[in-house]
Length: 165
Image (cartoon, rainbow, N blue to C red; front, top):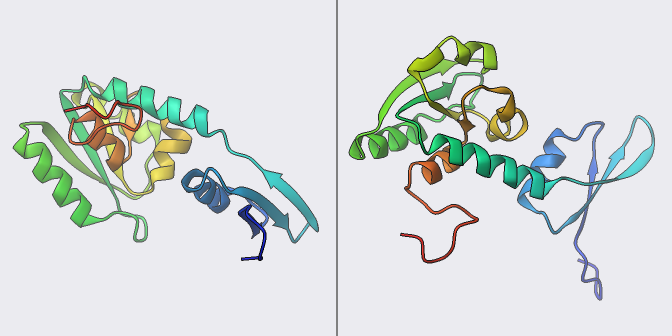
């Protein structure tokens, strides 16, 4: 920290935004700059937090009506976490929610569309950014595990009042 400086700023060195966006999503109040070493230029980067939250809220609302759930466990690298799968399956079983686990190395709208009407909503245990960045490309809601827990009523949504029960 610089004495007397009350602003927080990040300078990210890279030629792309993907990992910087993850930081910006988690830290919306910190100003982010990206220095591209190939271009030798510094860019002020911004992220549409309000738009992202609204898009995710709509996906959660659509998933609340789901009768059957597909749970995708990512098998690419170390993305899928079996412990998260076990915890989610246990919670769903306890609530009597019908679910099917599918292992996928690569999640795409085409692949999940093969399940047609047998799945009403999807939760993916791979990379949260798949849902955040590309969730709208899927015909059925594609949620992160956090979002699924909201849709299933296990936790309160960030937009819901404190009196939620």
